Length: 218
Image 1 (cartoon, rainbow, N blue to C red):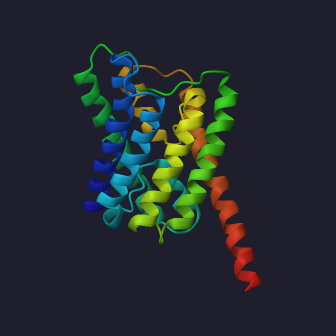
Image 2 (image 1 turned 30 degrees about the horizontal axis):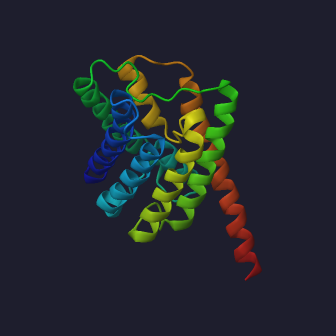
C-alpha cells in the first residue's frame, strides 16, 4: 500500500505544480513564462523521483508503468493499482487547483495548437524519447539516485520547452486526463491518452532491440 500512496502523492505533486504553473502564468499575464512552465515540470519530476523513487519507483505516469510492464520489469498484478493511484493523485491535484482558481476554465488541460494528428505524432515521439531515457537510467522498475532524477527531469524540461507550444508536451495520460475531467475540457483528449502509451511501447521494443544486440556482441 505504501507504494500506491507514494505514486498518488508523487503524481499529485507533478500535476499540482506543473498545471499550476500554467494556470498561474495565465492569471498573471505571462509572469511564469513558457520556459518557466517547462522548468517547473522538469524540476517537480526530479524532486518526486528523489522523494518517492526508492518507495514506488516514481512512475508518476501510466505510460511509464505500462512501459515497465511490457518490458517485463514490472508485475502485471501491480499495473492497475499503480495507474489507479496515479489517476487519484492527479484528480485530487486538479480539484485543489479548481478550488484555488475557480475562474480558470481549462486548469492546464492539454490541447493541440494545430491538427490533432500532428500532436498525436509529436506526443508519441516525445514519450518514446522519455521512456527510452527512463529505461536506461532505471534499475528494475525503479528510478533511483541522482542520475535518474536529473536525466528524467532534464528530458521532460527539454521536450516541454520546444514542443509544449504545439502539443502541450504531456507525455502522461494522468497529467492530461485530470484537468480535462475537472474542467470539462475533453477536446482531443484521445491524443493524450493513446499517444503516450504507443510511444512507451515503441520505446520498450527499441530498447530491447538495442540491449539485445549489445549483449549478443559481448
